[in-house]
Image: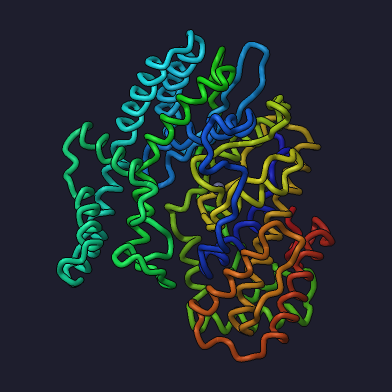
Length: 494
Ligand SMILES: [Zn+2]
């Protein structure tokens, strides 16, 4: 295999090491970041570009038929003279999703190509809805099961309310409708329709107690969960409505379509750690030279290790034979679209995905030279992640990907340093404007620190701020300055 286009093992070791540490410290690195999706807009009011993105998004959501991440689906759209080419990738089960979406797009194309007729549109929406419910039956059943204990809790709360309370009675009736057992396709359809029709119910209002309609600062888990799963249950109907309307308003999105699948490739073997993995060695690889800040970082890390067994957990991760990194669906598309210089509609380099991007995918896409649309991000760290292979094996493309990985690793290291120092020094963070999501990441870090390492705050916050900022800068500078050949100074990522 030509070594000129592969990311070096050294770079990958230096990527995974802080990633594992960050995951051990906390999985969630900040609040959700919104991307380029459209919410609460009907197709008739959307521009062509908005509709295009929403159609891609709904197809992704319908392709993702299982809970758990295996069937996460990504779609991009190429503008070809003969019609749109839908590029499809999935974390797994690609063939099954391809078959399903080919049928769906065929139905949409048939409608888009025929003479517009109200009855035909109504029939198409009905057929799409049934197809979606059928494909998603396992998801629907899972959501129904997860709803039941929360509904029980709320019904018990209603029992303790005053007798004759009209609102409590209405709320009780509304909840009980979701207790009907799921026995067949028809009952699944009824449940999802019920959810869709009640999606604007006053009982689902955010920060309002549904039992007494009073504002509440601390929402109960049961009401939050009910709102969440009812929202998820709406998906098949929402997709059927939107895709059907898109055939009326923007038929060219379907006429003459083709579908091109892109495999995400196979999983990798478990990553290998640096020899003699220690916190001292790990700390030294985070910084270019033995700076005072590195000493502070190591002290803080050792202190955390005493409280939370950091090093054993890092070592356990490397021993886990089930740790098999894989390419996430949106990145499988991103690199192949770059390699092929695909022509997007209106140069809108948008890749839709059924789930918001993870921490690594988000920073990979943001750092990518192809200027793709910034995706939504849930800011969670997943260790089952690896960069996509390139299909164009040139030194220039390899260098581009190496730069993206260096940028990503810098973000990971900065997140580690911030989290460790904040845990030790209890700092209140000043947002760094140099990165797209730093403000929300750091806000959340601050809260997570309070929760995860209670009692660790001993120094005043201005002191902590200064230390954390200084060290982050050292990490950032050192990644770009370090010689590629350096083995021990640590920060080189190549
Ligand atoms: Zn991802």
